[in-house]
Image 1 (cartoon, rainbow, N blue to C red):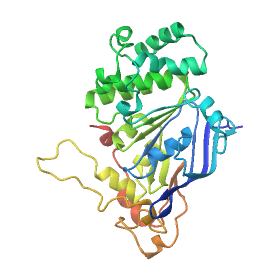
Image 2: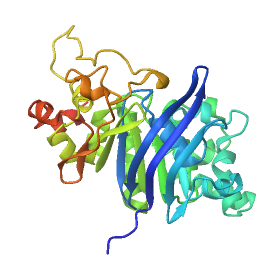
Image 3: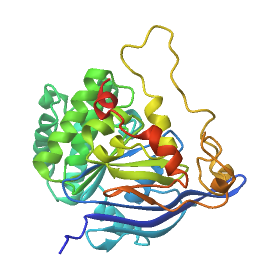
Image 4: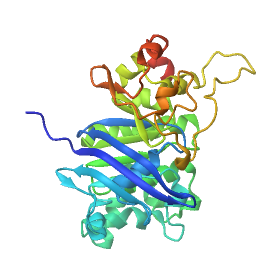
Length: 339
């Protein structure tokens, strides 16, 4: 009998209130995470990645309406009280936010902030929590961790602040870690250090990692499975190797073609996807990508395509797969991973 997934998201829908009326921001998401899994969630800004993370953390805006199921370790989290969320958040589910300078409290030293979840969820006293905070900062390779316990966020570099955020997230040994663009604004060397650190922590602890990124190379190198999101929908999903072997959805193909590549001559323009991600309330009625897709026909806007089997556990929402797949087959995963 197959084990029950640690996290099971079923038909998750989130509606936001906008100045122009209600808009569906997440439209029926379905995915799972097993213990020890690293799943990459990829898409352009505005596709719904960060909102997915906030839904999993119980941090949606007060005016948002959520439906469906978020089942974590057998418990449906949607509809539970804020007190229940507070007991779970920072303990068994933790998050590394995209911008540590805004996520960290500028008025408190980092040692106190790393120690806070230990005092709240583990009941440690001030001295023991401080000692554990130092151990956590050493674990994430923050230089001179003991001395930096009393430093404030503005006294640290971007890479150091991101390590502090990871230490806070790991404080209580979460079963699920959500990393939302954890390497934003870091140089290439620091990006690799942070991503290698997260990969090592998954191996060491057996936690599940949802790695949110706009970078195909990051997902290619660090995720075992991937979800491609556009307009609040998952348009393609599957094992990373399978998806890169057959880029089935035109949007995934567009992301792959638009990546920077070594060896191109000076002045060569990126193959950008035409247009831009529309406002949620302006999404077309059928396939959300149909107004930017080079393969779109009238039928694409009639209704949302169902997930179609492409290969083992590999699915894509596109009614024109016979026309799309010949050009999308055989992509170079190693090429995508090269920076």
